Image (cartoon, rainbow, N blue to C red; front, side, top):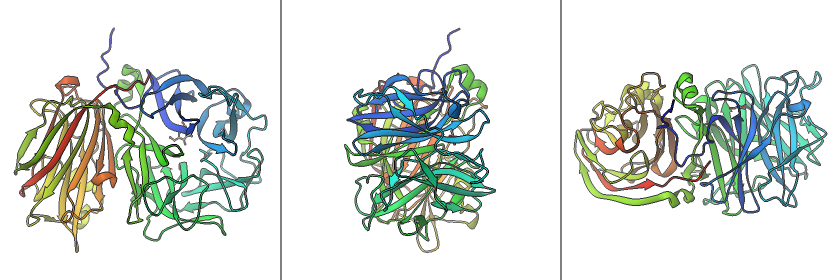
Length: 534
Ligand code: DQQ
C-alpha cells in the first residue's frame, strides 16, 4: 500500500524516515557544517537512540553519513543521548555526550574524530576513560537527572568548564565540571546557576552575546563588551527558556539580570513548538547559529503510519536586541537561496472583515514577509488583567473573533473555501501607559483531522506600534509554519496537517477582522525550492 506523504517538508531538515529529536553537537569544521541529532534507527517513536550525522556547506543542503555515535561500550550501551561539540586548540573537535550505562544511569562521555583529515569527520572514537563524569555516592548526583553537556569554555584560570543539566527536587540546576586536559573532570563545588521551581533542566546552553551589533562571539570569550545567555529546556513544560545576564568570573557563577525572569513566565526562544535547542559559533560567518527540534502535533498512530516524526527548525542567527533585554532571532540568510518567483503587494488597505488572496505562490512551500501599518488606535481594546498570559489571550480570541485593532495577519495553508487554515496574526491593546502588541498562531482550524494537537500559541511583542510597522515573516513548509514577529523579536513555530489545503491546493491570504483598517505597506512572497536533504 502506497501512503502519500503530504506532510514531509521540502526545506526543513529531516531524514527519510523514523524518529528524530534534539540537534546535537552542531559545529563548523574546515568550512563544513555538522549536524548530529538524536535518532531512532528502528522506528517512528523515541527509543534506541544514536547520533545520526549530516554535513553541509550552507546549512540548507545536506549530505547524510553513517551514524557517528552509537552504543558500543558500557558507558553508553543503553543509549547515546544529547551533547555538544567543543573545538579544542589546534582546530580539534571533541564531543561530550550523555551515555546510558548498564544500570540505566546517566553518565558523560567523550568522543574524538578518528581522522582529522576526513573533512566529514565520519568516524568517532570513544575515550577509553569513559565515563568522564558519573553520579557517585559521594557527589550525590541523581543518576536519572544528569545529562546533556554543553559546549565547554575556558575559564579565567585556563581550565575548561562544562555544565550538565540536572535537578534536586523542583530545583533546576546546571552542575559544573572543570578540566585541564578535557579528559579528567572534577565537579566544581557549586553549580554555575540554579533556579527553584523550574524542574529538570535539559539541554542547557551557555554563551556570550555582543552588547552591540549582530556579530556572534566564540563561547570562551568574556569581558565588558559581552553579556551572557543561559538557555534551559524545561522538561516539565517542554519549552526552551532563557535569561540574559552576566558571567561573574570571580565567583564562577552566572547571574541573570534583575528584569530577566527565570522559568515558565520568562523569555522563550519560541512560543510554539520548539525544544532541546542548541547554538554554535560560526567563525566563518561570525555569527551564532541556533538549531532547535520541532516535534509533531499529530497522533502517535499517524506518526507510525507516515513512518517518521520530528523535524529541525530552520537554523536561526541570534544576537542581543539593542534593548539588552532579549535576543533577536532570524532565519539564516542562506535560506533565501531557495526563494524563487517573487510576488509583491504594496500599499493595500485591508478593511474590516476583508480578506486578500495572495496568488502566484506555491503556498504550501513558501517564504512570506509582510508589514502592516495601523493608522488609528482609537478602537484598541483595553488589555484585561486575565490576558497577562499571551497564550491564553490568543486562545480566548482566535482569528475569527472580531476586535478593535486586529486581528490582522495571514491565513496560511488555507483551503479554497476556508474550511482549513492556520492564522498568524496580531492584536493591539491599550495597556497601562502604552499599546501592547499580541502575536498569535491559531491552529484551531488547521485541519479537518480531529486527532491533532491544535493548541493556540501566543507571545507579546516588545514594539511600539505608533512608531513602527508591525511585521511578520512566515516560513511555510507543508506541515510546519515558523513565524517571526517584528523582525525576530518573538517566534512561534506550529505543526499542522491539513486534509484539504495540501500541496497545490493550499492558499495564502491576508486578512483583517478588526474594526480599524490597516494597510499592508509591503508584502513579498516567494515560492521555495526544495532543498537537497536526504
Ligand atoms: N532528549 C535526550 C536527552 C535530553 C532530551 C534523549 C531532551 O539527552 O535530555 O533523547 O529532549
